[in-house]
Amino acid sequence: MLRYGVEIGMGDNLSLPERKRSTYRASSRYPNALRRYLSKLGYAQYLANQAVCRACDAYARWDVEDGQDESAEEVLRVRCRACGNGWRINL
Image (cartoon, rainbow, N blue to C red; front, side, top):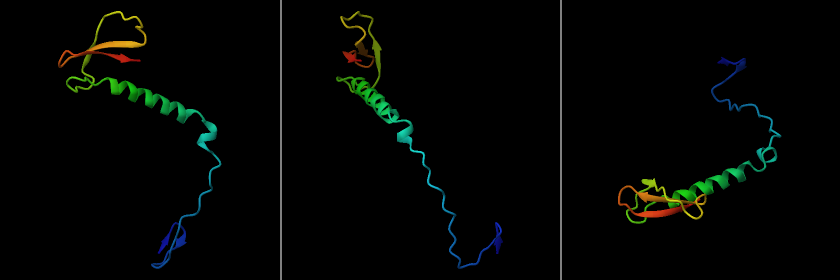
């Protein structure tokens, strides 16, 4: 059978032509990208672990309270919508 300009028989073991190995290395072009991504992922997990109500185990069902805290930019005071339990989320 003739396919793509090559005679192919039933028992022929054809392989694709080898591709050149790329000299491009992602780690050399973006050395800090993975580190930065993993850092942000770890921070997101840190915040997500604090978003669980300890009283009723509801996840991310809270309202932000309007109280001014002594370190307002580092702490977020929240109250659970399901049970009314209040806690702080450290930012």
